[in-house]
Length: 119
Image (tube, rainbow, N blue to C red):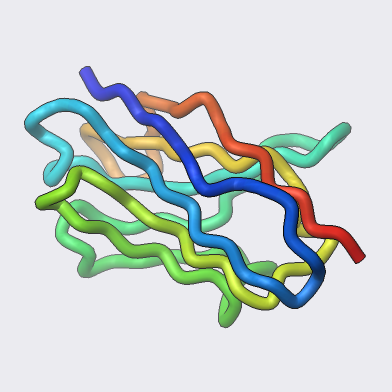
C-alpha cells in the first residue's frame, strides 16, 4: 500500500512557476504509474499529467501541454510536476495519484496541495 504526500503548492503571480513534489512511501514505487490531477472550486477533478513507472510514457492534458512537465526520481520515491507560465485558470488543489496495476487506473491518492495563481 502506498502513501502519497504532496508539497510545493502556494501563491504565485500569473506567468510564474512552481514545482510540486509527491513523495511516496513503500518499496514498490518504481512499479507504479504516477499521475497528477487537479480540482478547482465548483469543478470536477481533472487529469493533468501522468508518467509510467519507468518514465517511458508520458501524457498531458491539452490545457497544460508545453507549460507543465512531469518527471520522477525512483531512487527518491518522488514524482514532480514543474509548472511554468502559470495562468489564473490553473488555480486548483493538485493531487498526486498512483496506479499500482494498470495505466490510468489510480488506486492511491494524496491529500492535495493548493496552487493559487493571481492575475
